[in-house]
Length: 270
Length: 311
Ligand SMILES: Nc1ncnc2c1ncn2[C@@H]1O[C@H](COP(=O)(O)OP(=O)(O)OP(=O)(O)O)[C@@H](O)[C@H]1O
Ligand SMILES: [Mg+2]
Image 1 (cartoon, each protein chain N blue to C red):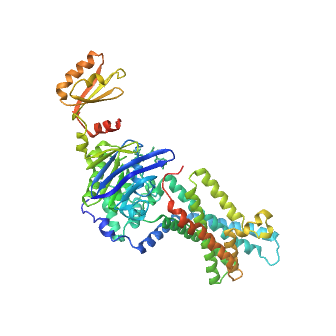
Image 2 (cartoon, rainbow over the protein chains, first blue to last red):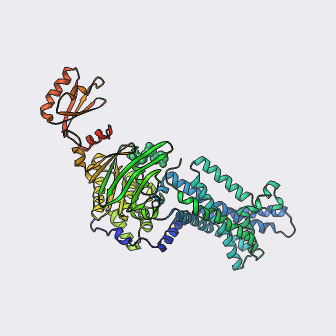
Image 3 (cartoon, chains in turn purple, red):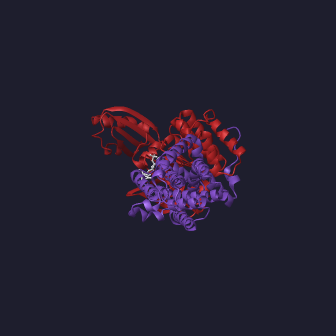
C-alpha cells in the first residue's frame, strides 16, 4: 500500500455512540430488504400468480358460498394478502438457518451489535421485506375493491406489519433454537401450517371443522386478517385483534430479546 | 501491557474438550502466532475471544472487558478474518468490504471507498471488485476475507490461517500487510498450522495441542528450549526394529524421536558424532537411506512439544 491508512481505533474512539447502534440495527435490516431487490422477478411472478389465484379461485368459490352479509370475494381478497405476508415472513428463519449452515452467521455475530439488536434488526428486515413484497398485491386488492380511504389503508398496513414482525420473530426463534436441518424444516413447516391455515384469513370460522375453529380465533393471522378487513371494509379498528397482534410481537420479539436471544451462539449447524 | 487474557478458558462441544484450561496473556501491539495441528482448538479459541462462542469454563477478557459479560465492548475492538471465508456470496467483493466498514466503523462513504480501493488494489483484486464473491476462486475469496480486516484496521486483528489457498506472492503480500497493521498499533493474532508463517510473522509463538497451550515464547527462545541446538534427521529403510536407547548412550545426544522410518536425533557436536552414529546403526543392521544435519527449527520445537510433525 502506498499511503498508510489511518487506524480505525483512533477514529472510532470515543466508542460508537447510542445513535450508531440504531443505525446498525437499521443496516442489518436493510441487508435483508436488499435481497428482495436483487431478485425483483420474484415479486413480479408472485404478484401475477396472486392475481390469477384471486380471479380464478376466489371468483369461483365466491359463486358457491352465500353467507348473508358477506362478500366472500372481498373477504378472500384481503385474507389472501394477509396469508401471503405471513408465509413470506417465515422466510427469514430459513435465511438465518442457511447462514448458520454456511457459517456467515458466525461472521455476523462478530459485528459490534448486541444479539438482541441483531435479532430485532433481522426481524425488522424480514418484516419490511414482506411488506414491500405484498404491496403490489395489496394495491391490486385495494383497486378492485375500491378501498380508497387512506387512513383505513394505513391502519390495514399497520396490522400487516405487526403480523409480519411477529412472524419473523417466531421464525427466527425457531431458527436459532432448532439446530438440525431436518427438524428445523419440519417445525417451521408445521408452524406455518398451524398459523396460517388454522386462521380466519381465507375462510370464515363458520366453515371450519370444529377442531380448527377452536384454535383459529387465536391465530395471529386471524388477528391480522380481521383487523385488516375491519379497517378496509368496515372503516373501523378491531381493537382486540390489534391487541392480539401486539401481544404476538411482544411474546416472540420482546420476550425473546429479553431472555433468549442473548444466549445465541455461533457454530455450524448440521 | 497485556490486552487479552485467557484464564483457564475451556470450550466443550458435547463430550469433546475443544479447548481446555487455556491460559495466556497477549500483549498490546504484538503479533502472536497460534501454532497447532488440525483440530488443536485454534479456531475455537479465536471464536471464543470474538464472542461467537461462549466459553464453557474459565474467563477471557479483552481490554479489561469480560467476553461474556460485556460482549459488545469486545466486539467493537476485534475483527476476525475467518479460516473459511464467510462472505455474502451474492455480494461483490467491493460491497462485502464496504458493508463490513459500514458495520464496524464510522467512516463516511468517501473514506470507505478509499480504504476498500487501497486494499483491493494491493491484493490485486481491484479488477474483480464487481464480481460476486461466490464466483471467485478459493484464493480470491480468502483474500477478500483477509481484506475485511485489512480495511477495518481494528485494535485487535485476528487472522485464522490467513494465507491458506494463497499463491506465494500473495502470501508474502498478506504477511507484509499484516505487519503494517501491527506497525500502526494493532494487536495481531494469527492462527496457523504452517511453520514458516508462524516463524516469519510472529514475535511470539503459542503452540497449541489438543486444546491446551504447550509453550509460548519467541521463535528463538522456543528453539533454545530444544536441547543440543542441532537435529540429525535419519531415514531408515525399515524403522520397525529401531530402539532410541541405541543412540541415547552418546552423551552428546539429548533426545531421540521416531516417526515410522524417520529418526530425529537432538544433539550437539553433530558433525563429530555423525560418523559414530552411522557406524552404530550399520553395525546393528539398519540401512540408512538419507542423513541430514541441521539447526533446530520451529518444526523440531513443535515435534518435541507435541510429538507430531505438521508437514
Ligand atoms: N461448532 C462445533 N461443534 C462441535 N465441535 C466443534 C465445533 N467447532 C470445533 N469443533 C471441534 O473442536 C475441535 C477443535 O476445532 P478447531 O476448529 O478449533 O481446531 P483448529 O485448531 O482450528 O483446527 P484447523 O487447523 O483444522 O483449523 C475439533 O475436534 C473440532 O471438531
Ligand atoms: Mg481452525
